[in-house]
Each structure stands twice: as C-alpha cells, then as structure tokens.
Image 1 (tube, helix red, strand yellow):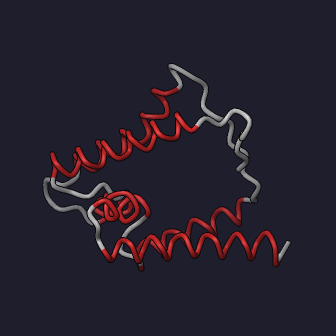
Image 2: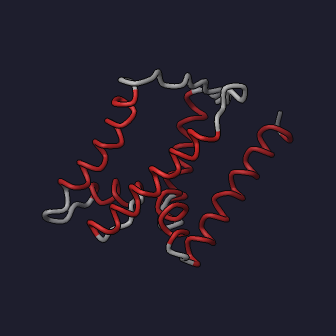
Length: 143
C-alpha cells in the first residue's frame, strides 16, 4: 500500500484517532466491554446466549462506516503489492498471533494501553517489533 504523502494532512489522522478513541471509550462505558475486534469476532464463533446481536451490530458498523464515508468523499485508492498467497499467509499469521496474544491491536493497542494495562503494553510492543522485523526481512534481506 502506498501513502500519498503530498496530500497527507495530519488533521484527518488526528480526527480519525479521536473518533476511534471516543468510540472505544463510549463502548466501554455503555457496554462495559473492550472494543477488541478479534474478541468480538471470536465471540461469534462460540456465541453465548444473548451475546450475538451486539456483536453483529458492531461488525455491521465496521462495514457501514466506510460505505457512509463514500457519501461525502471518495475512498482513498488502495494499492496492495502482494499476491493472493502472500495475503492468505499473512492473514493466517495475524489470526494465529491474535489468538496467542489474547487480542489484537484494537483491543491491546487502543483499549488496553488507554487503561494502562501492562499486558497490553507488552503485547503492543511485540506487535510493533514483529511488524518492523517482517518489513525489514521482506524489504531488505529477501528483496
């Protein structure tokens, strides 16, 4: 994926971060739950009674938000420089990582760090280090 640095504005990034933070805080205050996507999706795989509707509504909101955005502006063009096999392998590795890490970047990075969770600090540091190492190996050692 390539970023358009010429048209990048920090204000849109700041606004997006504020909206994510407000949504995560509101979700925790209203529902008493962490807005971690892997946990929400995982809960649908083994649903508890009365626990399906809010999870489906949350996921529907994740899908509806970019669709609603297109009413006001065009979505940025995404360019993915990988083949289908690489994307499938990456998806499987991310899925395994979220299971072993007991959460994902939204649960640990957004919600856990804001609660000053030591476990989330460690998990987020590992997520970032693994990402840095992967990019370094793929772009510099294997290129």
